[in-house]
Amino acid sequence: MRRFLMGLAKLFRRTPACFSGGGRWSLLLRRRRSGGEEEGEEEEDELLPEEWRRAARGRLIRLAGGNSSAEFKSLARSVIWSSGSSPWSTGKKRGAVALKSLTGVCNLLEITAQQRKAVRLAISPQVTEHRIWRGAVEGVLREVAAACSRRGPRRSPGAAMAEQIAACCLQFLAAGEQETPLWMQLAPERKTEPGERRRDWAEVLEMVNHLCACLAKEKDKEQEKEKEEEEALCAALEKAEAMKEGLRHIKDLLLEREEIGYKEARRQDCLVQKRLCKSLGHTSRCLFLLLLHYLYGSIGGDDNLAVDFCVIRPGARDRREMHAGVILSAGDAAAVSHAVRQLDRVFGLLELVWKTAEAKSALELHGHIWCLGGAAEKSESIVLHSRGRQFFIHHLIKP
Image (cartoon, rainbow, N blue to C red; front, side):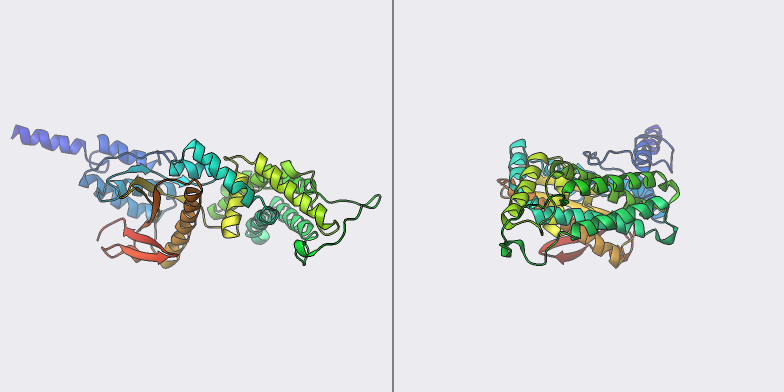
């Protein structure tokens, strides 16, 4: 009897906070409640008792109806890791990872320093072409205008000013566009007339500086605004700040291509590409935005390049497996479709960098979506196919 009571006491010391208020597992539950882990850190590898999992699932249901996304996803990761099923039982586990630079992508793929250099040298000349650079700048400006106009009539003077600056800058860029492709225009070069005003990238940089100043002031006032609008504003400001890095290096180069000859236009294009290749390093957010525009024709928009968890482990026959996914509080069709599109973009980026690095092993990417309700109400996982990839939809709470 004494041994039985001692075992029972030990069990209660290991139960969740909702049962006993103390012990190792209650500490872990409180840590997950506060979102205690750092972004991208390696997760703990331990199987939690069934009592803890039951308490965690009950709290997940309560969190799903609230506005604590970070706490919900942190606790959901613990439930996923503690399931003990493959592929979560083996491999290196990582928490939330947001891809914002080539360095972040290489860190996730565990690419060596020599391979990182090869990746940058191969990618930079492609993504810094004039049309890619110009398209990325215009894409950022359009996103800024959209983020400001989303506020509607109630937007502040700062947001209205930022939207006006973005529109003016887009018009300024459009003034130099040509309807006929550059390589078909073989007009001879002509000298600039005395007193004639030449347009250069310095004017765009000046506009973007004013734009960022307006957005920064608006961001400070966003404490009481809706969360969605605040996130859109922060994302737009971050991208505008990133493009300033490239503009500083090419500000003395000509912007116009309509009033100069073919040879001079080609020379300016090559100078833009050369300076950006030389100045934008591996950690550059600007270089990463150019890569996104090169791959997808846009700078990201609403499809965040981020995953809520991932597991990396060796595969069969000199292959490497990465299981990555997102966690949803709702499993409706729209949310699942958005998650699939988000993972598809992430995987496309990872595959490009992996192939460019010329890694010896092949990379296998597996997408996972964990959610409550909706498509995950059944006990079996659902498999979706998109662009030759498989995405598995799992349930966080088994029926």
